[in-house]
Amino acid sequence: MPMPKPNPNPNPKPTTPVRARITETLGGVTLDYTDEWGDRRVRVFIGQPGRYIRESDERGGTRQVCSGLAATGKTLIWWREGHGTRADQIRQEYRRMRRAARGVAS
Image (cartoon, rainbow, N blue to C red; front, top):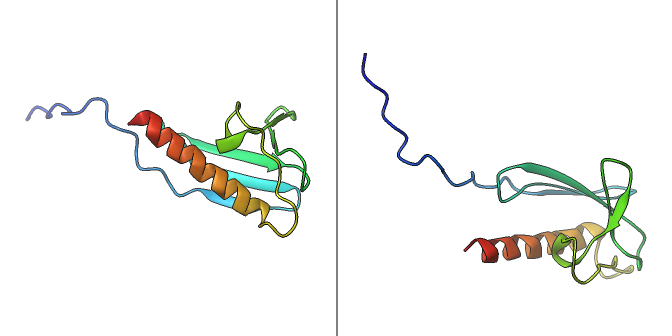
């Protein structure tokens, strides 16, 4: 019986991220994406136009969200009517988050 070939790369890079899904609901916006380590994440953002964007957690609590969907930095406020949808705003911040992750990783 032939011996199996050793894995030439024992620590492969994470798989290519699956496209993010951003869904706007009556109560907020759901962001479903693959993070830079290859783990699937689902985040829910809530709030009213002109007020702080908050992220709900699995324990029923909420926290304020900052630029690039980060935990620290410039606190985000939902756009007022006429500036775009809440999904558009989360999409913009998601792109900012991914750009920042690429900049740190490279």
